[in-house]
Image (cartoon, rainbow, N blue to C red; front, side, top):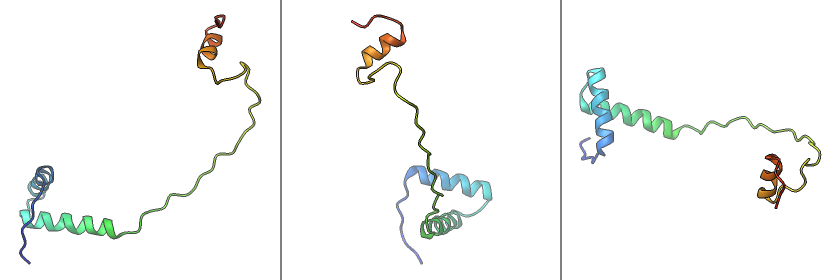
Length: 82
């Protein structure tokens, strides 16, 4: 089948490098890339196994409220909070 494709410059450059590395015609490089790409797109997405983090009780904060970051920093730097 004959058709006209508009190929982005970055894709054309990659196809050209592939063609030169494998010593093949441009047409064959395009067809091989399309076959592999279509195969990958048609596959079911791989599912990752679920992982869970077990909660741990850490107790209360040693410095009180963590809502006021300026106070937390001053305590961390051993300064009197103003």
